[in-house]
Every structure is written in C-alpha cells, then in structure tokens.
Image 1 (cartoon, rainbow, N blue to C red):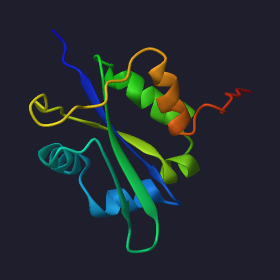
Image 2 (cartoon, one colour):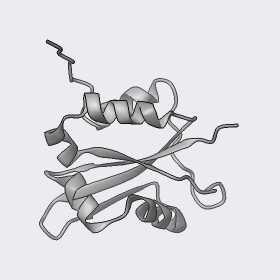
Image 3 (tube, helix red, strand yellow):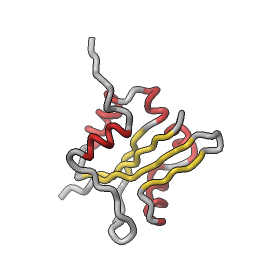
Length: 123
C-alpha cells in the first residue's frame, strides 16, 4: 500500500520561498507544525516578507509528477515567491486535522500556487 503524499506549500510576499529555505528545513518545519497542532502558519521574516506555510495531504502522488510540476509549470522567478516541498508524513491523526485535498480542491491549491493562469508555450 502506498502512503499519502504530504506537501508544504510556501507562499506570501516577494522571495517568500527563498527566505523560508534560508531559515528552515522543510521537514523539520513540518514536524514542528504538527507538534503544535497547526496546518497553516504565517510569519513575518526579519526582512519584512510575509511567509505563509500550509500542510496539504494527498493520496499518493508520484515524486516524478511533483518534479514535473516544479520544472514545467513553475518558472524560476515564480519559485522564489511560491514553492512546494515534499515532506515525509508523520502520524498526525491524534495531533492535528491535516488538510486533505481531493478532486476539485486540487484546483484551489493550484490557484493558491499561482499556476492557474499559466499557459504552456512550446516552440
């Protein structure tokens, strides 16, 4: 049986994901969020950037698909502000109600990532 896929979505102000990467390890940040019972955390970086981190759990998603999304749908400039990080899920049933994203809710996550209005162009 394949386990669920757990992602951290990091977004917010300009350079939010860059600032997050400078200050935190995604796995450790996720575990701290679970320990205190949070599925979403917003904080102000010392340089004034608002950073929002949220946990999203899906039925199994291939890591290859996640890489495809990151490489083909997210451009470099966009990834400085918004990014997703795959983390190893821990048993959170007793600690926190993790956001489960299914079906039509996936489109909401895509919009939150800022990918909803992108169009692919190939030459």
